Length: 214
Image 1 (cartoon, rainbow, N blue to C red):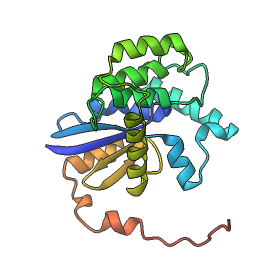
Image 2: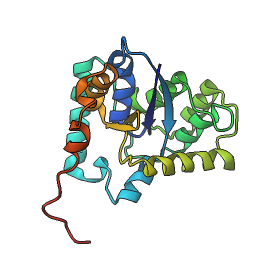
Image 3: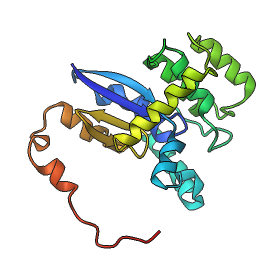
Image 4: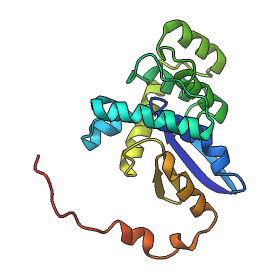
């Protein structure tokens, strides 16, 4: 079976939709999925970007688009009471669900994602976080230094691999970014010959014509 890594932060509505759609996208494919949390804000800081929700016209479009995707795909989705929000409690809880250096399983990631994207409540409401903690039943203390260090390490590894956004799916060293990359990922898993030729590398070689100054 092919190893596949799903890099995510539950703050992203696209990560939620891709997570929910992943079983359909991978149907009939022989692969095993690792769910690897990272801090999206860490990616934004490293690459010098703003998040979609930090640019007001883009924020409005993003939420309209994800609502349409959810409608089209038949996925239940509600906007959380506040967005963006600080996702650290959720990310650390996910890592703490597993033993040291382990990863959350799909059930745990589902709990994290649906905590944010179903019901329209505040993702960081203390009472809701306590209920989520009980449902996850972590094996370690989410506030412990080892768990915090693991999250930082995952984010650093993601940056080293060239990951700039979530969700990103990694297959054979190749990165597939976004909900709309799922058909492309499926084609790669099914052995589409396009991926065996020079097209993948050649497509990324176009030189920039203009480089903006800092």
